[in-house]
Amino acid sequence: MDHQPPPFFNRGPAPLVRLTFFVSLAILMMVLDARFRYAESVRQVVALAAYPIQRIAMAPVDLFHAVANYFGSTAALQEEYAALKTKQLRVAPDLLQLEALKEENNQLRRLLEAQERTPRKSVFAEILYAGRDPFSRKVVIDEGSQNGIQAGQPVIDDVGVIGQVTRVYLLMSEVTLLSDKDQAIPLQVLRNGLRAVAYGGAEGGMLDLRFMAANADIRNGDTLVTSGIDGTYPPGLPVATVARIERDAAYAFAKITLTPTAGTDRYRQVLVLSSEAKTPPPAEAEEPAQKPPRAKRSRKRE
Amino acid sequence: MELQAQPQRILLPAKVSFIVLTLALALLFDLLPWRNTAGVPELTAAVLAFWCIHQPRRVGIGIAWTLGLLLDVGNGALLGQHALGYAVLAFLALAVHRRILWFPLWQQALHLLLLLLSTQLLTLVIRLAAGAGFPGWTYFAGSFICAALWPVLSFLLLLPQRQSEMMDENRPI
Image (cartoon, rainbow over all chains, first blue to last red; front, side, top):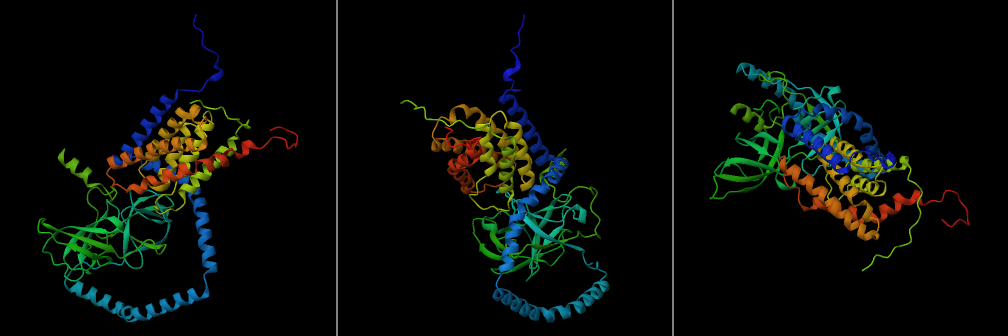
């Protein structure tokens, strides 16, 4: 006769069994997320569940900002007011000419039968928080697919490009900053139109301008703007200035480091630009814009 | 050397609501906008390890995994990275929970340091395998601070269980 012990001390499956189960589940999710991006729906659901928790977590910070604003001294406010006024005066002539120049530019482009640059729609958003993930550089903004944000849209602040929307939830979205290791942006030297691609991942939040010939005409202090040939970023937005150039005869390429113009540490307000509507996306229309290039290559090989 | 049996306080049973509350507060702390500040302790990991050690029948690997998943989504990290790390942390904590409470608090903190460091190392290896860059040695600073906070944490989290049930001057406990 087989006697089972009475279930006084029944504690379910052994810890090792549980560990194996949960670890396999986690590994499965990681593979699905990193390699195939199938885990987005899981992420959407959990994000919606976590949204109230995140808003509660934000509450003390919001309160701190509100209190700091309240007690912000009149002197500081007056100073800011004066600075803004001088800035407005300084840019006034440019602004006044802008309309005329825009019209003239459009006319000239029509003459050249070139594509007219259409104004883009933009969505105003605020940075909620920066993700606490030391491996990547991302911020979360408070607009999501409910307000028409789509993955791949460029994000700017008042002085330049800060990054690109890479993941959209219902009520918020994740913006990958230019300084992230996996982020690249096509640029153009403002001075001479030289095209290049900048990559994130240099230390201290700097950008790397890779694959520029050692004798390329680029100098310290040069301003780089978006070139617009990717169809994602509109052309002419300031991105970075050249901080350091190392030309070594041993290498074919110069090592060029850039300082990003925009800083996410200063302001919380950003503008999400809508993607260009004129150029229809290629055949895989529904694919997210941020596909890892490795996946594409492997498909070609098959 | 012989371990001296120290006088132990008889504790009240832990309340489930208190466990849930502390875990939720730790999660909120971890979801505050820290902006990659180096050395901010991962409180969720510490509180989780505490409850795994003190209440192994209530808090276990499943809860750890769920908390990790919430953190992953909240921080925009690789989905499952914290879940895996916390599941392993909970397992290790459950494995040592019978022994660790015999040690004085600072030696318990050393145990905890090892647990947290191995969890972080696991996360680091996973992220490096997934293609991220090395975030620098300050990445591990959080674990040391967390371990240093262990005595405080132990005191605070055991406080409700130390209250006597009926207030009475003549009661021994």
